[in-house]
Structures are given as C-alpha cells and as structure tokens.
Length: 441
View 1 (cartoon, helix red, strand yellow):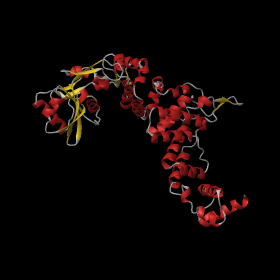
View 2 (spheres, helix red, strand yellow; view 1 turned 180 degrees about the vertical axis):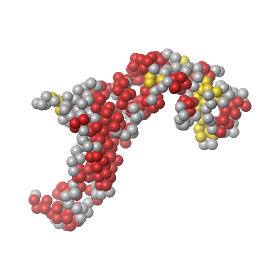
View 3 (spheres, rainbow, N blue to C red; view 1 turned 120 degrees about the vertical axis):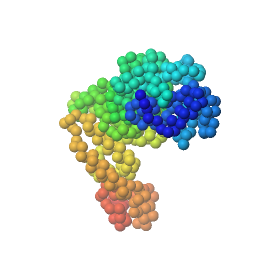
View 4 (cartoon, rainbow, N blue to C red; view 1 turned 180 degrees about the horizontal axis):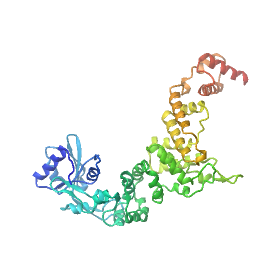
C-alpha cells in the first residue's frame, strides 16, 4: 500500500537510507494518510540514535526537543519533523510515564508499546506499510482497539483512557468490546493525570459533532474528573415543559450549540444546579428557583479545578449565570450588550436557541425568534453601550444644580432610559429627564 509523500519527506528517507539506517513514518500521520486525511505533522522512527541523526543531518538545523527519550526535531524548509529512536519502555509506577526508556533495534519493539492499533502502523518507501497489529483492518471496520492487552495499555498511561474517547469521536470509530471494558474498569486511574491534560483532551471530545453520544455512553468515566455531572444522571425533570431528564436535556443542548469550547462547556453545566435546588410545588411539579446561580457556583468550581485560563473560565461562568436571561424587549438586549459585549450576547442567544430545542415539543418556540434576537444584537451593538457614551456628564448636572450622590443616580437612570429606547441620547432631552428626577425626589 503506497502513501503519498512530499519531496522533503522523500529526501529525509533518502538521507537515512544512504547512511544505512532504517527510518519509517509512524503513528498519526500514517493513520491519517490511509484515511485520506492531510496529516498535521509527520513523525519518524529510526534505529539511528539521536547522535547519529545529528551526524546524518549535520547540514540541517536540529533541535533536541526530547533528547531524554530519544527525540529530536529536524527542520527542513521551515517545517519540523520529529525523529525518535526505536525504543522500549519498562515500568509505569505513576500510570503516566515509563520508569525507564531504552533504545531498541527493532521496529516491532517500538510499535508494540503504542496505544491503539490505528496508531501503531509505520511506512517507508522501501518496506511499504508495516501493520503488525491489524490497524488497517480496524480502520476499514471503524474499530478502535488497543495494541495487546487493553488493561495493560491503560495501566501504563491513564491518559489513554481519554485519548480513546477522543480518537473514537474524532474518527467516528466504535470502541472494541475488550478495550471498552478496560476503559470503565481503569477509569479511576485518571486521578494520576494532570488536570491540564484532562482539560485539553476533554475539550476536544466535548466539541465533536457526535459529543452527545460519547458524553452519555461514557458518562461514568467523565464523572471521575467531573463529579458535578452525576447529580444530573436520571434526574426526572418532573415538569410539563420538559420531556427529558436533566442529563439528557443537557446533552440535547450540548448537541445544538456551536462546536467551540466556551459554549459547549456552558451547555454542559448550565443546569448542573437544578438537582440541588429542586423543590416540589403545590402543582405537584418540581421547580428550580435559583438554579442559574447554583449552576454558576458549580461552573466556577469546575473551571478553577481544571485550571482553565481566566478568559475561558469567566466567559463560561457568566454565560451559565445569565442563561435564563429574558429578552422580552429591545431594552433588555441593549442592557446586556452594555454589561458584556456582542460575542457574549451572541453566545447566550445560541445557548437559549439550543435550550429551547431541548424542551417538550409543545413548548418549543418558533426558531425565527432567535434569528431576530441575533439580528437586533448585531444592530444594537453599534449604538450606545456604555455610560461614557451618554451625551451628558457630571459637569452638566452640576450646572443645573444636581450635586453629590444624586449625580451618579441621575446618570444611571438616564443611561437605562436610553438603553431601553425610552428617550434619545441627546443633551437637551437628557437634561430635561434628569431635571424631572430631581423635582420628583
């Protein structure tokens, strides 16, 4: 089976061959090429040691990026190519990293230590495709399978548990039965993985088109690092407005928002506070007064624990807090734009659109409502948004005899009236309005 390679890659292979060393493209680039996808990067494995790679490519720039583990980065025409010496690993006491790494002389020993069959294939122009573990067959059959014994692969590196979900979601693969059993039995090992790595992997899973399936089928695995979601599992909404339990309502919202981390995280956590505040009313149904604020507190804890950057954390938490905001007039749109910005309001409307679609059919609002909200948000974003845009200030108020705390009060009232479209942002009209406030006090 031939894989198309670039001139630069062909030159690298030729340089190794002329120096009597083996070299193969390996891992993800081979997998992607076989699937007809364009690889993001190209990794080589070779029987040459890092020192020998330096000698072979002495006229090129080489960076010792992972020299401890036998990896260097070769720069060719400003493109990086990772080159790693065949290696074998022993002992994984921390369930993340090998206790020791040693060089190997065979490609098999290098490939047998890898995670999944689809990532354990290699290619060179001379040898063609090397597939010891059935990676091609698994790709053709849409299967994700561990190399060797699944329990051992996940014991070696617990991050592979989330990588399994990520690869399955990204490539639309079904996880093989024994591999799936091991995912669940070894899920507790995720506690050995740094929160930063967990967040990076989960971000991708959360943003796949088919995220709803993986979030539901593997919810007990995800709950290991996100225990806040467990209270939503099988929690009956017991509300005439809903036809799903809280968890499946949440998944429907996730499914219907754009595939980007901030809004996907918001969708996942927006109702997380409902089970905490649920109270049965006189009508026999459950009511969730204050759930947005409770969900906000939960979101804050999650974002902090997973070490999200301030921008992402702030955006998610604010969206969760405002997710039930009522857009019942143009003034409410302007008020929200003045408090946040157009990007925030756009995301909030997208969230509410998705939330609407996850209600009982008889209570789903006309989708055109949200198109109109988005149109108005865009239009109003060019209008007055901040108090500093008001055509009067404190000096103007002093001239008509308003002093002290009354200045702030009058400016705030005038600003809100302009946002609500009740008065124009014109000096004379604003002064007339604040004068009436003064007289009525």
